[in-house]
Image 1 (cartoon, chains in turn red, purple):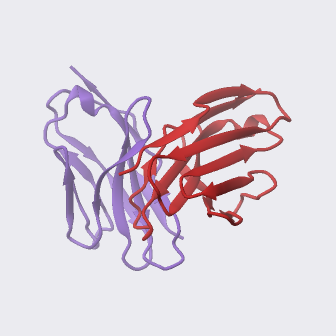
Image 2: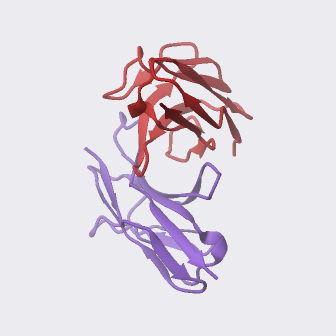
Length: 115
Length: 114
């Protein structure tokens, strides 16, 4: 198993600013992902965070808007850039074993509100 | 593409009632199926899984059977407790090599009253 810590747990941000969310895993994992959960909706994968290389983004998400870093196996950051109210959401970090079996561990999420 | 359709909530039950949360899916090949649970103030946790047809996943009194003929993976529990109050997500992992992600349903909020 893995315990995932995210911070901040919540924040209120002004339009046009950027915020970086940090994700720390307590054990070495191969797969790390970032999801978005918009109010009343399901989880949508933003990107796969790759160690030491550029993240792999899903359709509809771009690096300029959601830059991601993963300097080592246990840490990743997601930045939400130039925020607008439409970015108000819960952002979830998740991690899983190398085989990507679908058995993921999730952080508690970071709830962002953009005014 | 892959998709998961989940019973809409919220669902409110009395303690010891029987629970069913419906989940159907669309996917090519043979996906793996999951139920995740999100308790208040916590992250999602894997509740149970099934990786092939007719498999039954079970955990904490919850069960779900992978039914390929009906493309379903309904979650059931015979007697719910107040502590089961949470949001439940059905999800699938595609079987193709390029399926990086889990596809989630919309979630079902369950409230169990004492």
